[in-house]
Length: 358
Length: 158
Image (cartoon, rainbow over the protein chains, first blue to last red):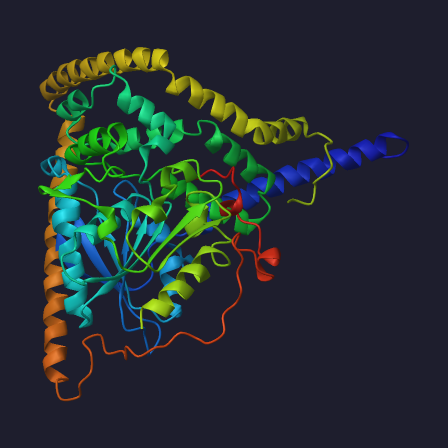
């Protein structure tokens, strides 16, 4: 074809466009191929196991660690590896490299025989046992708890009920305590048309797909928008890699035990009992004012899952004298595992813990 | 961004994508408002109950047909998954026991050396100087941070 005249400019543009599309596809395929299953890869040992729950101890990366060990508590509906997403995108690794002795509670995937597990099991049994195991393993008499999302709520309840000084400090991120701030879930919980008991009776545990759908309902078009953003950045390998890692994690939810779902739905969402200090664990009332250890809560500015309103006033609920609440840029997940977490949340957490874990 | 930014040639979809991304939050909020409405809740609740019954009936019906064909049903596969889960739990419990035994042996061996079980010194102190980070977490370094999927408010993850 002759390329003289005004057509040549168009031919050039068409050629460029075709090349660009091809290189995007090749780049996309290459990235898919290159992304190994390297999540949760930081070296660790399972030091305690009960039902589907695992307690991991990460191998310290420094010769000298802070005296008080740090126990990370995950949410009940998310896989633990968001805190150890990739070798260069890992809160766990950051804490290790900062000189902490790090442990993590992974709740695992509940099975039908666990469907009766309620918060009594998680808060009144499993988490206190994990704390005792960490104490025994580290040789220390207390631990610092760090809870993410619902894991933060579990950690707060456990600390409030802790009879001794086993909890040395408590840090939570994006932790819901006030269901009035969770408008959609609150509306569902208050609706007479939705019968949680029938759902639990029929299904046993709430399936992971259902949990995923509930989270998607909070921002129904976000996933598609994210994928479009990925298309615009397909030549940016780092962006694509991070996108796929998040996509994989965000579609990897875990079922919630029927008993816990029923309790959260009725006591937490509908009746807001935690905020009113009326929630009971094994017959014992949870009064958040009993939390007197150093406390920090970190909220995310763009969090739509646990909006600021759902954790508003958290600082006033606890009885600690040393307490702090900060809001950082980011969404519910990018706060803990996004590309900028290393400049935002991680150093804040590390600095706060380092002053209290000596 | 890619090198073709600002070059809409042959990329009409790009403009649409950009519009979608910009307006996604508003559309999502509108949809969430609808879902929070009691009328929607009633309809959805009824549909959901019907779906539960239908699913129960279908599972029974298909299960019978698959059994007649000597093929496993979904619930059969799920029960195998649960069995595997049970085995994983057992292996994990054994692993934890072995780790604890090893720890105890190490502890016994190093009793005189007065070393903690993990073998690391627990004497670290916080550094005197820290990088100042403001409430939005912005430091000088963050302005040169590479753009990644996780930074975006409208990224794919929650």
